[in-house]
Image (cartoon, rainbow, N blue to C red; front, side, top):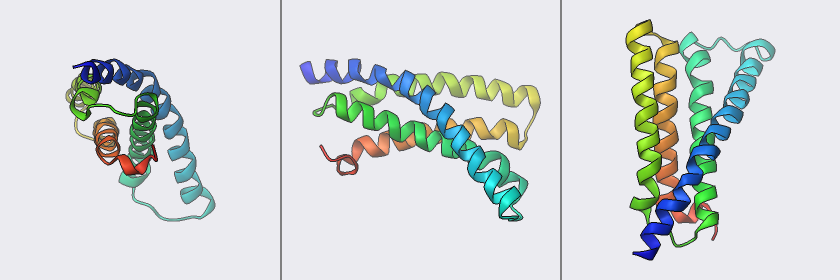
Length: 135
């Protein structure tokens, strides 16, 4: 029971690390696709130019959050370490779906949904496969 409670408490670190990871990953993604588009002159589709930077943002946020949780508490319980992040992502998805209904179906309204799904799936995948982060 002690491991489950500690896992739940340690998963609170997901919130600030995911926000910071999405912020930094967004800049990394936009910079990367700026280089692809303006410097390398690759003719990328509009879908890639608008959604890929946010998916990169979600990947950075999920991996940074999983790394933080795994370093703070090495013997975490996977289910309990995922409860709070899943609730946070579901709340964010609810906001993204309201944006989708407000603005209509488009690349700019689908990108945040893909970012949140990338964040929670990468977070869960990295925590499940502990060998990604050598303990």
